[in-house]
Image (cartoon, rainbow, N blue to C red; front, side):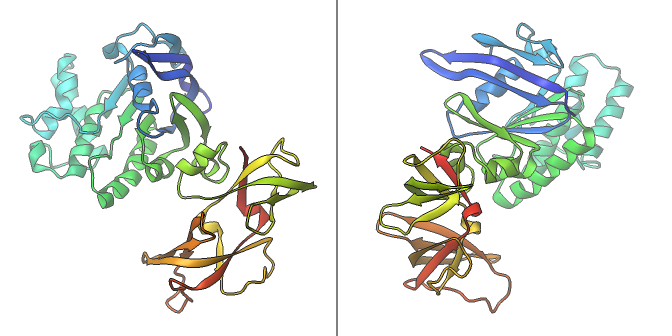
Length: 362
């Protein structure tokens, strides 16, 4: 699991005057589910196409299982790609779509039948081999595309926004299913997505990209709880932010001055000292809302007014007006039906402890 299956070394790709991929270096371990996450135009799809061989790097190298594939054409690379819109042949049955690549390679008929049957079993489509794509649901079409890729037994499976064409409920179901299939077959999966929940749910590790560069690579929990930059903090999930300046450092804690608000206590960010401009990032689920103004054991408390209260079934989501500049989001689980709820216009306090925030240097 520790050996790299894919390695990119200082890869550069230009589209005219635009640098789509800018000295990109990272490795993907064999047998892991690795997602590349970023906004539109961040270079993530170009990166996937470079690995697949559909595009050629202007600089740098790409290795698969320790061997350079820089000059290897797509059809000779040990990879298969699943596209967002599946690219199924509408006139071929499910089994015909899955068998197509094997037939083009001249595989013996008996082996084709065996491998197609095994691939359809793997994606839970046994018994639907004679159906046409138009007779399948979106989720079933996605699984056909997956079976068509898996039947070729690639070393690496590349997925370009694989769930993008599905509705929200089916998308959530397929997130779990894709990860389950990946664990069963033990292949390396590299998935490109702009959907944060998708990346966090499915991946062993995530790379966050912006403007052709990787800003952070890590386990989903690390990316979410310990973002390396303000961009990562604000791109991954919801976050609330305070901008201020470190007034004093006392051991592992610091005191941060925020204009118009009480002093904020937080853990000291690495390399920061008094006078440093910083941003304090707070996740909505780490904040506590109360009618009481006293800290009651919390390190920080700021006054607020409820601007909006939204019931989401499993939680209440509040928008809180901190001052004329700041509107925060707070999530409170609906643990039981009798839990106290706050109404628009209510005056409340927002409380949190020093270690529940992330402090990033500006």
